Image (cartoon, rainbow, N blue to C red; front, top):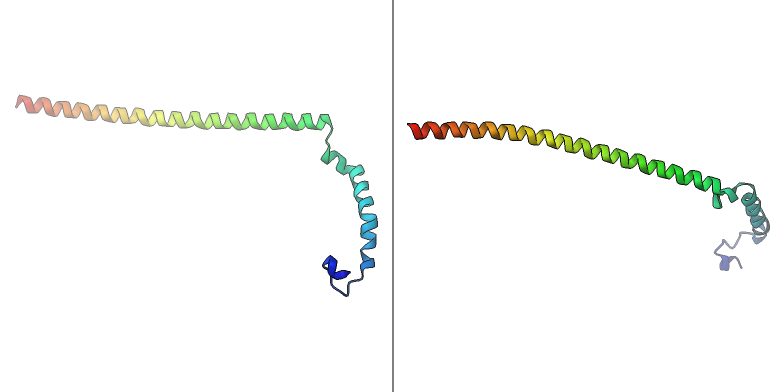
Length: 103
């Protein structure tokens, strides 16, 4: 019989009887003491979880929006600096062309 259960041949099967008899009873007691709230939470707990989740989602969206705005402002500053540099370069080139055509 032990070989059918995948147990060692020297293992006495009567050691499994308390587990088979009292295991389901123990599981039911645990379920009714505290696991019931974990598996089937009350509507108040569900509402609190939903509100907390919405708040976390809102704060994540706010953080993402702030990051995007910071990145856009940084890019804008970079583009403005690039435009200033291009303007100065264009003035220099214009002056060189003007000097070359006069000479």
